Length: 341
Image (cartoon, rainbow, N blue to C red; front, side):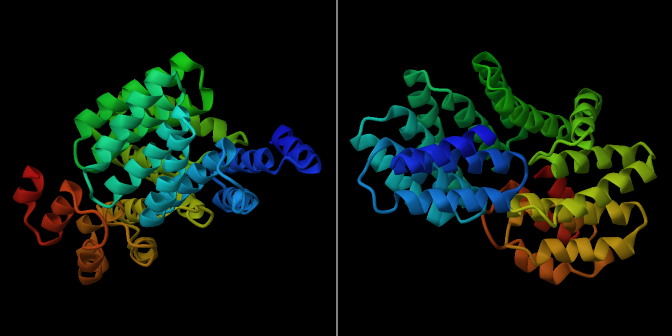
């Protein structure tokens, strides 16, 4: 952080606006990984303003691609596709293969988030371009393909693909990205029932955060651990994790964090006999930005919380996948169909 801030100041002082903007784009990424979306957005906006009136160049294409990336993560998918398209066209005109891959990842993720399966082709193309260019973006492209595949409903293939992203990050020495992809791999292990394999590394990750670090994934990893703790009759441990997750929603900048965190906590709190705490969590999920897949824990407890109608309406917003099909089946009490889906 200090080095990037120093570089930004020196570049501005020397009149190198383009590269100063790139420093802001890198600082935006740093703060996003730390889980501070407000500071990330501040740097990203500074970068965007700095390049707005400049001629096409590699730094401008980089900044535009980063803006597209974080608009996608914030759920502004149409805007992400539009800005990503600008970055992609610029990168193609300038022959910048690495930035072509970078922009295609953002476009592909935004399209799949809207339910457009053709976004998977963008992600696969990004992997091919990054591999041919010897670019480290092959790890991010592989990671996002994995996330898109499981988000569309294929957990097994998603788990296989995220393993490839972890391998790329390890091979290339990308320590921060290795940790990021490894967390998603652990999250999927929890989801497919391999709790013993996932729990130890998750405990280590969360212990590092308790020692003073911060990370984008803290809420999601705590929520998964809380579910296991509750299932293994550690009710107090589960409640401790869930309450920490609810605290984290107050500073989370992206709906892809807040909505599933609220939804998962509401379900866990009902199961733990804390319905008075579950109600506000459910309302947090339902009154946030529409994100259908993030609500898929709520149908299990919607009747207890009296939010069936509001939830049914919200499940119609956003990409419709096997997850939302199953959620609607649970909500209407058709558990056999839900299990089959």
